[in-house]
Image (cartoon, rainbow, N blue to C red; front, side):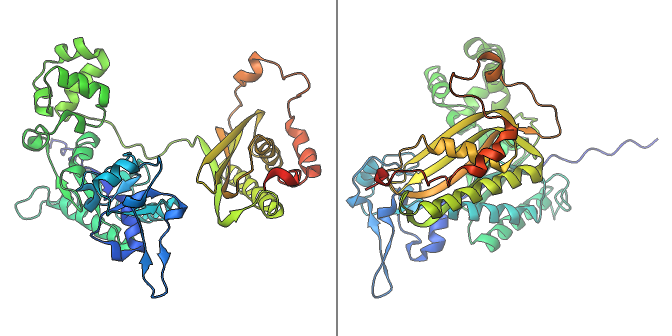
Length: 429
């Protein structure tokens, strides 16, 4: 009886966009390519178009404030600038660097575009954030092929094709690591940045992985890293030579055992390709900053539409939620959120609008608004029985503040004025 064929090699890729936010900005301002550029400024740092068609850019040397670097181009990183660094410190390191404001709407559009480009070639994807994903290449046609004398030639060619597809779709470069698991692929994608492609097997661990500093391993944070350094363990190779029992004695059963497995590149975690959403939201950024009094009718209409769209999203996808929240970004880029927990789950537009209006009344609206958003969280499948609320089980409604009954929400919303209509004229100067 013939033996069963061997299972295919596991091929997991980690794709990380290169200096993502900064690279998105360079698409818009290609004349800055090759220059040190820092992202993290405010609206006042928006480039100014000059009469001759050129742009005047803000420079770090002129910055004063307490902001932090969101990201920086590789040219700026060469001066020691990095994410989360204070902009004043970055100005001392690279005063000539261009300072640009953040534009998350642009970054989200680019993020959707690169993920769609990957899905055209390899549809099994775990989304890890705006600029990185894991991709299972194991069963993608051609990935297991040997090309010439390279047993991983098929995986290498597929990863290169993914990189090319991303660049065609977005104009951006990415770095990809391909290994047998997520842990190693995350490390591999960093090895040859930017625009890198690194394919490793377990046999490559001693030469490519063990020389790395222990903090390079995803899962070793500042405290654990400092403790490892205090124990004389600077590299992953040194960590790998430690006995599991020795690590468990010093770091606990679970984390100590994981440190040993991770140092040897062992990781069997599957890709998480679908998960229950925790919230659904809709938001919009205005073309101009809106005044809470003078633009009240426009704001009320926008807020009502956002509530309607969230309700439609919930109903279309089969969810209900108990917590309604709002998000506001003011003209100084300060973000404020407010939430309200309802006595029962809902996907009803009127209930969401009523609760959003209650949240709005708890916000100081003396500054102009740049962004408005509505969110429904604490989601629950509409076709599953509702679990009792811990809040309603532990405490009655406050005297004088009866809970809003779901069936009454439509009536209340029908006679409620626009969400901004009851603001006094002196709300803002």
